[in-house]
Image (tube, rainbow, N blue to C red; front, side, top):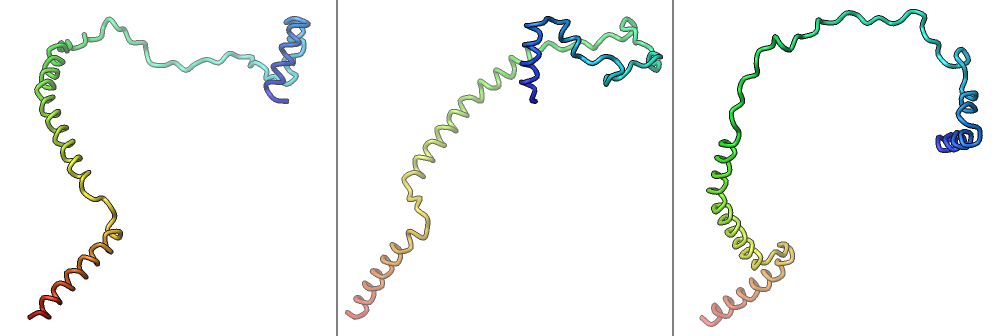
Length: 129
C-alpha cells in the first residue's frame, strides 16, 4: 500500500468514526513503539552563556552613501567609453560579415580554377615569345 492509499484510508476513518477510532488503530507502547527511557537524558554542561552587555562595542561603520556615489560617478565617466567600444565592435562585426565565411575546402576548386587560368595565360604569353 502506498502513502496516498494510507492517507485516504485515514481520512475515511476520521470522517466516519472520529479521532478516537484512529487512536485505537495506533499501536500502544510496548507493541512495536519504542519505550521511553526511565531516566531523563541530561545534557553535558556546556560553556557558560555570554553576557552581551560585557562585549565591546562594534567598530563604527563608515557611511556607505559617499562610497556608492563615488562608484556611480566613476561608472558615469566610463559609460561613454563603453558605448564607443560597443560601436567599434558593431562596425568590426559588419566588416567581418561581408567576408566569405565558407570553409576552406569549399574554396579549393575556385583557387584551382584561378591557378589553371593563370597558368594558361602564362603559357600563351610564353608561346608567343
